[in-house]
Image 1 (cartoon, rainbow, N blue to C red):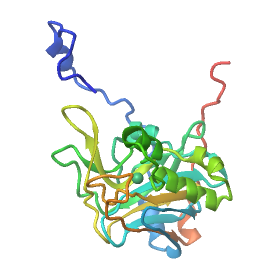
Image 2 (cartoon, rainbow, N blue to C red; image 1 turned 120 degrees about the vertical axis):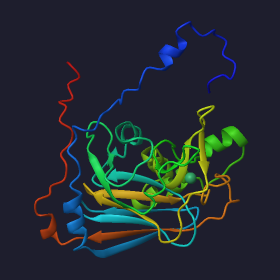
Image 3 (cartoon, rainbow, N blue to C red; image 1 turned 180 degrees about the vertical axis):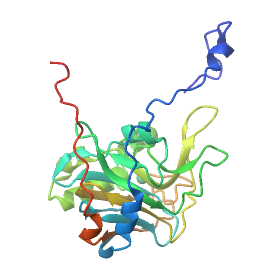
Length: 287
Ligand SMILES: [Zn+2]
């Protein structure tokens, strides 16, 4: 956190240094844009093939084959979801929140992609619909669907408040993956990774740069829909923070289920589409 009273005196040209304009670290203009027109034409042919419910303060796993769509819907009351994604055939390829943030910004919406970890670094999913895209950035700098948080976890809770709480998203995701893949909790836990915070409204305070959350604007009927670029295993936790308007990592907040639906299009509608290849770097690191 930046000190309110710095110990070091500002140099004479401090304001000139501060006035330099920012440069976008990773311009994405060179990336081929997602073919939303093809995705939407395919979506129009799709039928619902599966439904999974993440109960309050629990997580659930789902599979979304390459070329399918998955939709996360708020059904009963304002609720935030923590999403993990893996290559269904290789759990070592998983969602890379930090690189997705570097490429697309702090909060995601339609047309943004969820990128996978090194060395694959390829789109795992593309957001095709976002009923909260109207929210934009509020006066506090808050926005929805962030890739700046991590996931609520029992370790940080223990560090800051003490005690043992077992329904943080980290633990919920651990149990769900263990069940889905017949693993022990100890085997499943290392696969849990930083999330897409679905529906969560977050930002950084302007004065101290601290991570903040506020009550999500999500309401029943709102959804976020994705196109699965590769065969996916997903896990979604209905965060114990509910709408995250007060606190998480406790049973205090009102908490609701989240629905995941899988929609499978007519294969003919995707005849010109192929899953993205793994990244083209040769992996030699100069050796
Ligand atoms: Zn959580």
